[in-house]
Image 1 (cartoon, rainbow, N blue to C red):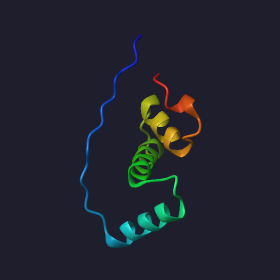
Image 2 (cartoon, one colour):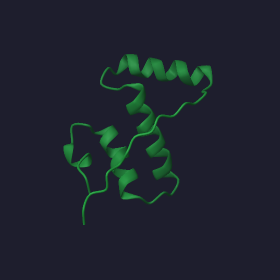
Image 3 (cartoon, rainbow, N blue to C red):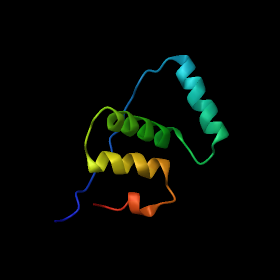
Length: 76
């Protein structure tokens, strides 16, 4: 079976100011994170915790939490 090519899409979202300030504070305190990685990890984590059973989503979640582990970023 050949790996599936996954594309990227851009999202635009309005967030409450306290959430935005907390996100900025987290990113400033953790320079290895950026808004894209944080959003991907948060969205994938939410889906996994709420019953989405997808290897691709789980791997996305783990790849963002543990970027030093290349096996999570490798195609299935």
